[in-house]
Image (tube, rainbow over all chains, first blue to last red; front, side, top):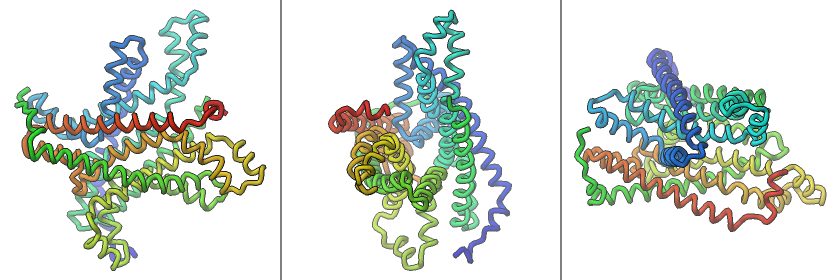
Length: 219
Length: 240
């Protein structure tokens, strides 16, 4: 069935494909860090008793969770240069889009993680005389973190898959590079199947890791 | 910031028509894909809870395969690769005679993709009903089929309404990927308005608002369904 297909094309273009993968991973890495930091701030705001803090955070999360990532990418691709007043590369606008989009999802994961720690724990911490800062850092957050770690990892794998969507603005990530090679060499079947296998291997390994973490850290 | 606001653009023809046509196409893809996903996801999810090893392994492989490859890659494979790998006459049919090839491909691809997450939802739902229900059913002499039909599934279908609704909303959002193979759904239409008029803020704002509206309607429908179908005494069952 694969008789007249040429998988050598992958070897010939390996350096370019590796560059693409490096960009995919870089984008994923920065967006995870940015998304978790912003998501944590949003989660704390959302859990605060003050409506002035929880309401904007809730609005932010619901806003980003109800629109497609491609639309968010278009939003920032279009608006960032206008707001800043000069053209920025597509990488930066995409990076901002991913960070802000993922922050909404990370916020919900972190919030759920914090809420999964029983009320008795914070009451107990208060009873033994810990300040609310001490209670948060040495009682609530360590347990919350253990609960949310596997979910954070699963979400990050989804985001790694989603980085392929930068295709719509022509940023050269792994998928876009594979597509460029596919059209240039007219090897569409080989390149797309190769891309699928690579993503499958990385994401499957990642989800196995998430599962083992879940077993290891289960309380 | 240097920008000429012109909100009228999204209410003038042809742009208003483009947006509405885009919304219609988005909903069509999401609904058709949702039906496919529900049918296949239901079967795969049930298979994952069966005691028959080959079925269970096949169902697990399905879920892992479809969840670990980006949807964009899957879409390109269905659209560009599968017709090449099919037997010649079939490939010929797919390439030449299939009605609305882009839309049909998008529907099949999104349906099979979301089936994997529905399968996980169904599996979790069945497992949450508890093994005791299954054993009790078997103990009173029901066959496995009857246990699923009369004991497990009627409860499962009610408990999984919220996750099903969020999967449907994910399908609505994911249908935007169809623009990569040339389907002019809502996101693509707003992008097109931006290209034609350079009124990007207005166009994207309109699309955003329409997506939000769909989300709100689906969530209300979900809450209504959940309330209507709730099993009396469900809470005690869920806690076991």
